[in-house]
Length: 344
Ligand code: GLY
Image (cartoon, rainbow, N blue to C red; front, side):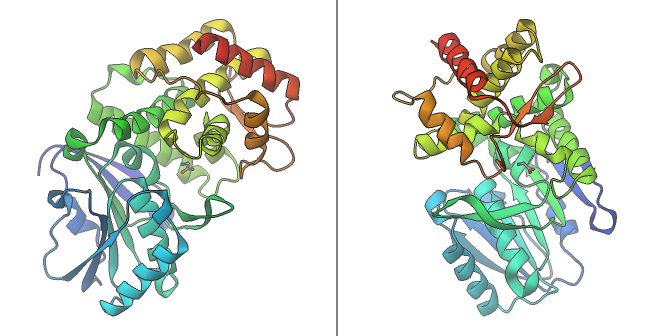
């Protein structure tokens, strides 16, 4: 095994390791419970088989799910659960998800549902899964009424972030992960740019692990992980998901900076810092998609599942990020104009 960084998500007797590095797949064997006699691998056709760990002393079955949001459905969960049953999986056995965020979300929810919950281990092969989806226990699928509207908190037994997989990750998927990574710079107000990629991923995992340990079910500070996501979700809806999540988050971070500035929470220099990270460091220079109007975006921001009485934002301030509600339409519109003007 090569050098690896290990971070722990502290959740009492449900605590688990997240191992980050190159050549770290063998760690998966130690993460499966000792009771396991069967391992059900859930993966996708596009994931190279070399990233599927080997497991000694157990029967292994493989279950392929389709690629794309159209497969992130309850019917995929039903099919997986039927296949687990046909493979003879019991409560002592384990699901191992190998892939990006869609695979870990779907396999995690299938594991949470089958026999009312069996262990799951995530092998993350995309940057987005490593620093976000695979860590923290959020699992779920889409329904026609919205993304990720049906799911469960189901913490994994362990997470392996196999960085070799990033070498062959399609450029667009890498950009999506970088959009989420940019977010962490503002959650902790740290310059992560001097860190190597392994250390930067491990730092993002540590930040998320600390937040999840403090607020597993998003009663409070876990909401800060949604920085940049209010506009991002609206952009995804308005473009019928042709803009990818991380690309939308990159734009959403800049918008959140303009909105905080309009509200007098941060100065222009801090807005510029957002551009330096998103455009400069990560090269995420996404424009607002053509033909999208502020009216449409305001309606779609109101549809965000986190919006309760009014549109909910996470906004920066001199003392850090905070959840803010009750912002006037005027400020929301002014900040959209600022963003559109600056993006050109
Ligand atoms: N992706 C945000 C969270 O896990 O809370």
